[in-house]
Image (tube, rainbow, N blue to C red; front, top):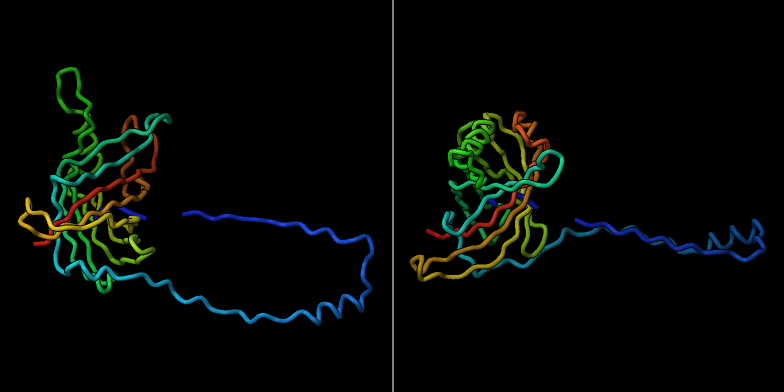
Length: 225
């Protein structure tokens, strides 16, 4: 689309001076003697290009993909569900990944929680699908930025419940290879994670789900056509 894309360390050292305090003249001479280090600009990071990956259009293999979401239930544990119907297209430019384009979609009515009512029906899934707008949820990339040799930040327009707002996925390239079971075509593997606030898309009525933060987890294999 798969949704996307984290650490800082601080250290401090204390130096204790001797009991005597240097005179003002001494302090000034010491300060004057210290060399001035010019500020150097940092060049943008560059990463090796995976030249063995052929450019072209790749389609999601739905049999080898999962789109999960997690949301807090009743202020307690995190509840996990999936979408059974999904699709994605990646137009890959391996020489310049920033020129690649990703579009993806899931069917909001294909929510699968595994929860059945007393009659064995999936009424809970249906209520979630309605809360999500009861139609297609789509994502279209607007920018792809490499953050490492095998990672990227994908920013795009997420349309959900009839509203469109920006969303970000942090994606990882997991590997590639030709699969004889899929016509000998090149297959790419990706994972992606992202977080959205459901209330920004007007999804306010999720009954037992009290959390507004929705975590998205994607695993995907895409096949070159």
